[in-house]
Image (cartoon, rainbow, N blue to C red; front, side, top):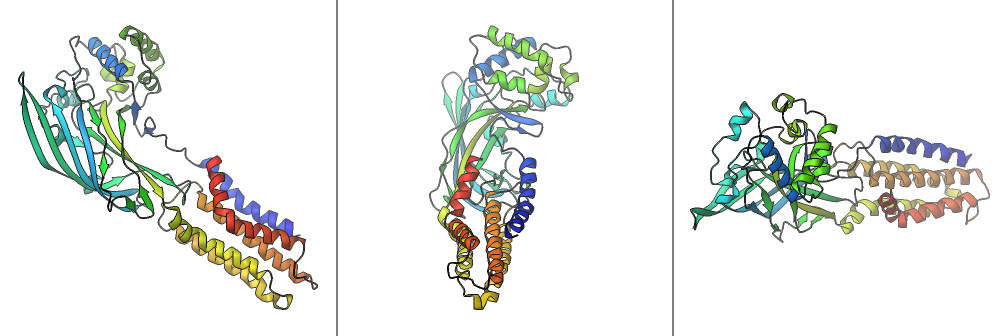
Length: 433
């Protein structure tokens, strides 16, 4: 009978976890993962240059040339605070510095789009490229962006070198991955784009960023790793065929042209842009690449890694549960004469676990998938329930011995082992799954 009751309890606990696991969303894949109607492509630079040259020729711009140099950007973070998982945000502030030249801006427009998009593409761009940067990962209402410095240095050949510095502050949004909470590691991306110039007229490149060592490297229970600059990506409409081409390197424009011809036949139209590109060479691919205005966008980005401090996690989350389980094991040695006290301890511990679990979730958003902490508490509930059954078995055995019966030994051993090794075992299992 005790085994049957325990089996029923396990079925009740495991069923919702199995359903949640089947319904859980996929992990984010970083660059290249769709973001609503657009995606970020990582690309081979030579392939992208060849792609722009080919599309320029078919759109009537045979003399099109790409900019010689990118806009170099360096981000210096001076503060990170107010990490809020419920809102998926963190407050960030710092400075972004840029260096660019006169030849960093392409002069010709190769997109054949008309109407509003065409007018927008002909807007005269100020030489201060940094004044028209946008930071899509910041909340609009909270973002502050102010000029610190703008300097122009004349160069031979009627050219100039520009240096600019701007300070920024605001609420930075990110997508937390809490599957391994409270042993999780988070990744925060900060992207920078130009509001007007597409990638064939301006390329952005992030330099190695920096962060102040104090107090920015400590963010609550997380340690902030040194930020890293990521390769420049291309943001445009999501097209699997285009992603495949951009990830390859071709020996010549002729080889790229052959691959584009094959991919064009298998690419569906972008319905929102079909009227703009109907009847044009590679119209299907162009309807995706040049979707929106401006498009495609050169995107420079940096990424910060957050790693949880295991010491604070252990003391705040694991230690109370382990201590509660140890108390239950100790209570199983209470003499039979005080069996009523023995029976009252597991239900009390059960309720305490419920409150501890709910308090652990107070700072988390509503999740549609189980996390490591759920599995940890699940096994804690199983141990608590097994110890309660142990008390019931003992209450029916008037001749209870100090060592207990066979079931008592199993219940004590499992509960004691989980109280000591439960957290690392659950953490290891989630890493393997």
